Structures are given as C-alpha cells and as structure tokens.
Length: 232
Image (tube, rainbow, N blue to C red; front, side):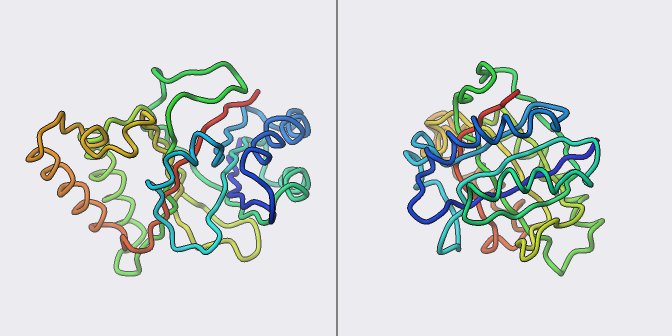
C-alpha cells in the first residue's frame, strides 16, 4: 500500500466548516471503496479557527486542511483527485512515507467525529545546506525524540515526501502531524511542559528553537492548527 496526502485550500467564499462537512460526507463516500485504511482529514473548522493565533504562515491564502488516503497503488490517484477537485479551490498532492512516532491513545473519538484537541500540521522544506541523509538523521534521530521529551504531544506522525503528485505543489519535503490538547496550542507553559516555571519554559523553548534551526530554515516553516477527523 501507498499513502497519498493532499493539502487543501478553500474555494472563494467557502467556509472551513463547509469544506469539512463535504469531505466527511460526499467525498468520504466516494473514496470508501478505494481507501485501504480510514481516511485522515485535517481541516480548519470552527474549533481550529478559535486558536488561529498559533498559525505560522507566509501564504496570502493559508491552507484549509489535508486529507490522507491509503491506496493499493499511487496509480489510483486520479480517482481521488477527481473526488476532491470539485470541492476545493486548490490542492497539492504528495506520495509520502509515513512514520507514526507517537500513536494517539488518549484523545480518541468515534469514527467520523472530531478528535479532541488540535493537530498542528507543519509543512517543511529541506535546506540546501544539508544533504538528504543529514536532514533525515537530524530530524528523525535528534529532533523527534526532543519534541516528544519537552512537548505535551499525544500524536506525532512524520510524512516524508517521496515526490509531488500535482503540478505547482509547494516544494515541501515533509508534512508533520502533531496532536496537542487544545489549550496547549495557545499556552506555551502547557505546550512546553513548563508547569508554571518560567525558567523551565525558557530552557525548553530554547532547546526546541535550536533543534528546529539545526535542520530547517525556520522562516520557511508553515504551521497550521487543524481539527482531525478519522473516517471509515
């Protein structure tokens, strides 16, 4: 099996709630016969919009979500794209290798319902100063363990891009899904497990920023708070 992810942008005048409703209903029904695992839908619905001050973006029109689909073969992608395209303003597709570094065992929901919490979707590029091998080693071998140590994460999924599938897709090399309690994404004390200690917050935040800068150009990172729905 192969995992495909499609980053989604809204149509003009379309609300994120409308996009979520369509993806959870009509689109999920169309993809049900193809998808080999439950669909993973991330969307900027009302719950995510409430914490938008956590968003980091350089885009004039920020992304509105992402859908992950497991297929027998990437050759089936035309059917997926045909199901998505009428309902979005733009999409960018990628074939990825998924690593579930931390599985969600605490913030669970019934199939098709919203997962409690917020999923931060980070879209990252590999800096030219690093070879692919160096980049993976730092990201996977050093940064991921640190993130789990000093952040209150309940989900950590790395999607390493094998190749883009659609024209004009942004040159992202990784798409990272990290689940946090909703209050944590707007409370650094909670996010960085500082437990009310300003010195500990400064230490953990400093360690995280240094780690991010070791394998990314931080000014090029996109980070978006989204709601998760697992469908199927």
